[in-house]
Structure formats: C-alpha cells, structure tokens
Length: 313
Image (tube, rainbow, N blue to C red; front, side):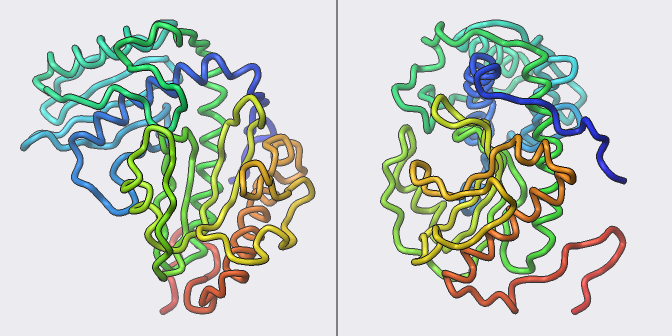
C-alpha cells in the first residue's frame, strides 16, 4: 500500500523548536528510567525508544519479576505508564516545566510500586540543567508534537525497509532520546579504532563502546538553530574518500559542519516519490561508506525484503 499524498507532513525547526526542546527533555527522563533498569546491551541498544502507532514507547522494562512500559501518546497527548499486572497511571501532556514533568512521572512510578533513581543531568546537551531544577523549558504545542511524530512514522517505515537489504549485523530502527534522532546502523563486522569521546553529558566509555566496530549509520534528525530538519548518514571511522563520493538524490550533500551527508527533509517531502528519494539517499550514502571502507559487500548485502518471502540461503 502506497503512502497517501499528505503522509509526509510540513515540518520546520523554527516552528518546532520550543515544543521540541521540552519534549526532548521529557523523553530523556523516560529514557533514563529504561537505562537505569535494563541490562546493558551492545552499542547502548537497551536505551532507545521506539515508534508506536500512537507515539513513542520504551517497550517492556524489567522490574524484578514484573515489567512495565512508559509510552508517549502523541495523538491524545498522554503519558501512559502500564504494568504487566494490569495497573497503570496516565498523565496529561500539556505545557509544564521539565521539573514538574520529572516530579509527576517519578511519583506515578512510585505509586505503581516502581522505585527508581535516574541521573538528573540531561545527556548530549551542552550547558544542561538538572531535571528537578529546569523551569525554563515548559512549552508544549500538541499539534507540533503530533506533526513530529507523523514524520517519524514515515521515516521509521522507510528505514525499516532499508534495513532489510543487509544480512550483516544491523541495529533495530530506534529513537535515541539523547541526540533525539531516529537511527539505523549497519556494521562491517570489523573492530574500529577507539572513539575520541567528548560528547556533552555522556561518559567517554559509553561512546567508545557504542562505536567499537565500523559502522554506516543513517537516520532523521529534527535539527537545531544552525541546521533544519535533515536525513543524515555518516561512517565511523570515516574512510578516505567518503565525503567526496557521489550520492543521491539532488539536494544531498556532505556537511562539513556535521561531518556527515545530509538531505533536507523538504527534499524528501516534496519529491515526486518521497519513499524512493529517501531510499536512494540511504543506499547511496551506505555505498559510499562501504566502498571507501572496503566492506565485503557481497557477503553483507541482499535485496530488500518482501512480506511473506523467506530469504534464499
């Protein structure tokens, strides 16, 4: 089934910024709950959120013999905490400070018998404010939050299709609340040199473990004051010749400021076939990394998957 013509919503960073900054910090609080209780998985795959049919979710989090889940409902604008014994708490998503959201979320968990302490300093944000002290970020526009989620739904769908074209090690498509981006990563299978670290609010050991092996990673990022919303693709370590490789579609280019290929969101949204435009970006930038890095492409690649069709082995 093809997406409807208006499936890719209009989206600009300037219009989204205030809501985005608040939602980013709310998501960090929820993500850090998952981080605090979930056994460590390689490359920090135990910490992200995932797209759902209503917003973003942690998926089940273990708590002793119990499990619980925290979900952002970005249709009815609720934060839902549910447990495997049928209990739950629902909190409205509305304009409120980060400190208030932190207090009400932790109180809801406590009322459900879930006692957890999290690191209060936001990750990957320069000059961050502790959650319990942040009364600066408090704006939340439901329509803008919903629009952002609708965009992620489309990006998630295409990234998942792209992921099927690889039989080597690949990450799930997941939403990292630290950097606030939707990402999927392919691995060459070879170790990488130690990452230099230096990410604000993130232990260097975590960064080095995340980049312990060669990767080609791609996804969507809503942007910042200097960059609008973009699809991105990078390689670590960056092989010689990577940034000068030809990529598709028109509008895609290497950003020296970000050290990665970027494709403006509007280039996809306004394309005659947005899915094809995004897939061409993902595929061509992956090929740039794999070719420059001399990956064993014959062993690692396969055609995109189709429903109900097993791989031929």
